[in-house]
Length: 285
Image 1 (cartoon, rainbow, N blue to C red):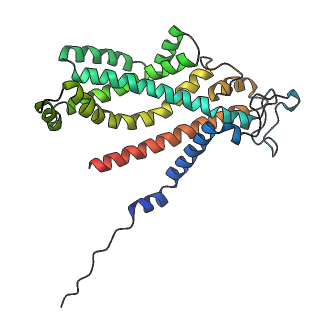
Image 2 (image 1 turned 45 degrees about the vertical axis):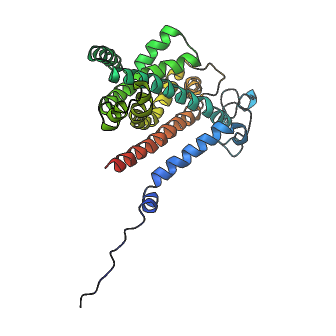
Image 3 (image 1 turned 135 degrees about the vertical axis):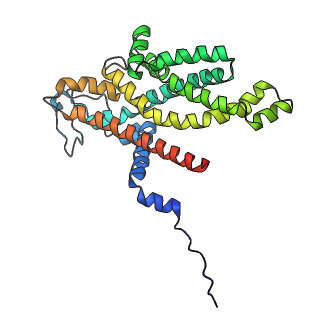
């Protein structure tokens, strides 16, 4: 008589993935610390970021000043923590501008007649021919310096990527069975677009926006480094690096800490975004 054995159960996939991917756990930890610094910078920072004492200038990292002091004797750790909010919010606002304008442009191109679709996409192709940072430099040169113009420049530079993806999604969804069924039942075209086409077209774009957030933060910091962002003594990371480059010989840590903060932020956000993309592709399969 043949014994009947129960099939082996696979190990718990979510738990094994968490244990096997410490890098992703580290990325979430860094992101949590960044959000805490955005919400409660005064609670984390040991001193006022604008408080200065020339007698304490160029102090190296120590137990009293964990990340050292700058050329004016200000605590670098406090300025780094308080610079998290403007640095991240500028990148987030620029991403929202690019996502909003790109979604509207892509949706319009996907639903428009062929001649208008071709006209809009040729304009998008022209913008795609320029690197994002160069395009942002051109825009900010035309409209002037300042945080608002910096956000608009970085956001507009990212519009072509979102527009092309939304257009491709719209073209594949507009003839889907559930869309044609809704139109057959007498629903207004505007209601079908807002209720069926737009939500399904935007879903994959949100993942691209999360990955693109890191690029927006980098571009904003680069423009601030070039002098197009917040002016001193704002503790924004790019502006801090712009001042720190003048003191590389005396205090190299002034450049190292904001550069490390930008790198960790971008890598963490990109890792989380790619994991989200991987999970969404797995669900579709």
